[in-house]
Length: 435
Ligand code: PLP
View 1 (spheres, helix red, strand yellow):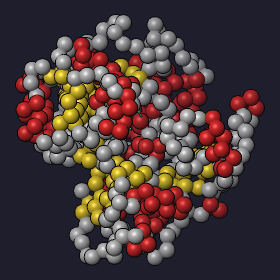
View 2 (tube, helix red, strand yellow):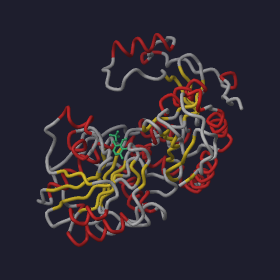
View 3 (tube, rainbow, N blue to C red):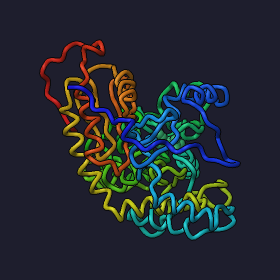
View 4 (cartoon, rainbow, N blue to C red):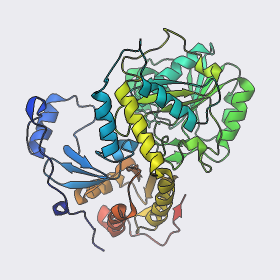
């Protein structure tokens, strides 16, 4: 079967660069790439494309080619690109009151905090601290943990919690950590999903246990059934803060507002602290720490933490608009339905696919060999943005408003790939799983 490719000719012509005093200039993709290399630090490698415009689930590059965005800015663009409600909310807030110092409060900031506490079904005494990103939310968690007076923090192997020094201390991957050591101390990494080790490690000198309900960067790896429930019991027994990093899984990504509320993931086990970012602003930078008890909420007192931009009224307006649209359009039900259908169909999408993991619209397609990079390259050339999250798995974290008709061409593309052309042996019949 030949790949079905979104045709560039279907697309409206890309808008030109913004004119006037904010003009970025003009150029071909090659010219922009050269300017990028000459002007930006090389922390991300060469950009895969230079993108100039987005609309819904599609983006366009500087040469006018259209791509189906199945990565959504890595689980960020919950409403897709250039959503009119989000755009209008940001614009209206910026035109009314764009920024104030944290010596002052704003209605959008207060309303968003209330809304998040409501969605988390937070008990009385719960409180929010706003940040600009996921790593900063986890940075605040490290400070909260220190304020308990206990020396140890537990995290899991495979974890990813961010790149600033405190969050990096919670992040397992040696290649990310080692160039920056010494990192803040006291963090111990436990084997992923091993309850016996957790039982031994939890004690009265542990300040916090920091978990992802689904480890996103490790390849969309959900905690095993029962792990979180037992972690909650142990945290209660030892007075340990149970912290869930929902930076990637929160705000509807798995089909529940938070993954801990998803019956098959967290099963409703309530944490003491949640960290959020990514999808919360629908593409506008914002993060949050939700402390779900008065004890957790008062670990940081006046003067003990701060940020210039955290709680910025425009970012808060973006958060309110994103949550408002997700709720108004019943997007979470759509995420559950589309995610289930997509998992099932992808699991049967040709000889290259061995398994599909994940929930809602956070999925990993496990391939029969370490060819995720090559497949992502072919997909990009064919007009699909996906992420080779491990050598053998593709991650999909598209806008939550994606439809079946929009994603079907990608399924056909994947099914059309020939393993032998990728240097893999011709597959034998093997059972497929969607989990
Ligand atoms: N925590 C998790 C689970 C993440 O997936 C990420 C980013 O991928 C972060 C924290 C860091 O967030 P940010 O990149 O906004 O700092």
